[in-house]
Image (cartoon, rainbow, N blue to C red; front, side):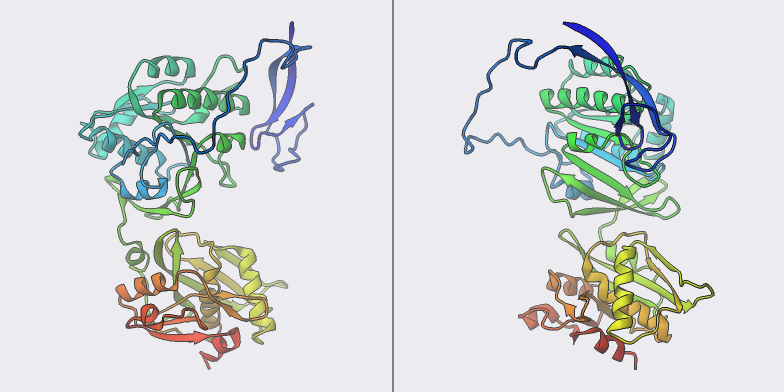
Length: 457
């Protein structure tokens, strides 16, 4: 069997492979991200005829289950997002913008787990910072005395040889882009290095049964840098959202083999690290000012958690040939649809108006139930008439102008009543149980956008 070296060209942004170099990647559109990498293949090698193979054994689908107990981190928001705790042998990829708090959260989690009565062994391996830098952060967080094993290393072979001889329960690699495997002939952070290093570390985690955290860098588009296959290799992918200049941080699961993917964890960045937010609705509405046009409160649902957030809209006469549409925290395509419905079905003139929309607090909303609140905020700003300060709203808008019912209205209204709201605008026939849904709130049922517009007349 003869081995030979072949040259391939990989995009460092998306992982696409090309037979020759080119300036622009056809897949992701990035420039100057394609680099040359060598790979070794076997000439004339057959998967079946070139070596002895071993038969695999098939077992019944209804076999015995061996469910190990989850490891609780002591951080309720992290446990919520991970599905109730960490599953031994699972691999979790954590991504987010630089400075968002990834390393801080994982150091806090390691310290909390290491302090459990069972005293599980936790290892924090940093490839980006020196030992003294991590220790300085630990002292600032009040974790200097936590029994966490700390190391600064980038050679994956050395890391695997060391961890393999321990009884590790949790291992943090910060970050996977700094790891290096000598067998992969490329620079650290390249597509082949990230893929090879992650594969070796994941294989060890499955063999030893410890929880492996991989910190991943993100691109300017917000996706985790490196090959997309990295997200397929791991069990859970967590994204940290939020603006660096804002104190709120949202931890969201976009993939989870052991739990739901629609849960979020809410944190507040303080001097002593990330602090859990037990009542996010009160925090998101803390700076809200009543009796201002263009502002309304949306009663949303994130997973199993109700959240009340303020939606702000600003509508003004445009000075351009084409009106501007700026959105922060919501889908711009969804905004265009709502504006089109308000113009066509409601008779409003928005083609000559600039529209700015913002979800206060740095939260990103994806559910269609926010349509009605967005429309209400836009109409309020256009007419310069404020909504009642003690009113919440939710509902989905269809293209024919109808208001559609949404899921879990009772949970939304219960959260609103708990925070002192007195009334709510809801879809028509939103629930069969009026007593359970309304409680002490006065409900205003609306069936189409025209009635919504009439609210301000």
